[in-house]
Image (cartoon, rainbow, N blue to C red; front, side):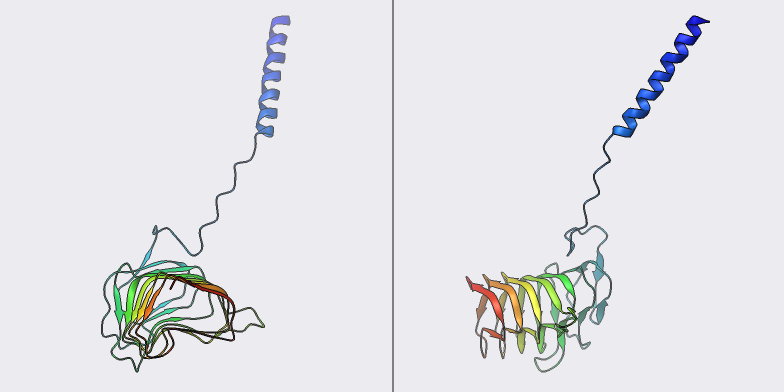
Length: 214
């Protein structure tokens, strides 16, 4: 009887010790938040034609050239947390007197990269938001784009805040290459900006913008 009792006491101690060990184990670290704008092509969505509207967050890849677009805007971005990757492809309209290439609503966390836009009134146009409500374009990067043979390469009627326009080629446009209104806290760096009909870079009612290395 004493042996059985000793065994039961020993088992009880082991169970109690195991329970305490489990209770003291640290909780696993939380999963990292996904990058915004997205950096991974996993689960990417695809754009193959003009007249596309982006209404949900995600990584979007242009899969082929879209030439002679009559749809305007050719691509509309109306969602936060979007990467629009042209993947080396060209988006082209029919005239510098009509249509818009990429039309951006007052969104935040947007990247546009790796492609060519030509033959529209505006290559990339950012729509005005409302500074009083905080609903306007924020946290935008435009990089490795060719914007040429347009009326304006890039245009915003503001506000636009916290932006990077870096490493682009913007040339041979009828009016301004980069024209920003009410732009704050941004940078325009290392772009080739040349042979435009009016100002290469024009800022109106703007502040705290670094223009360097162009």
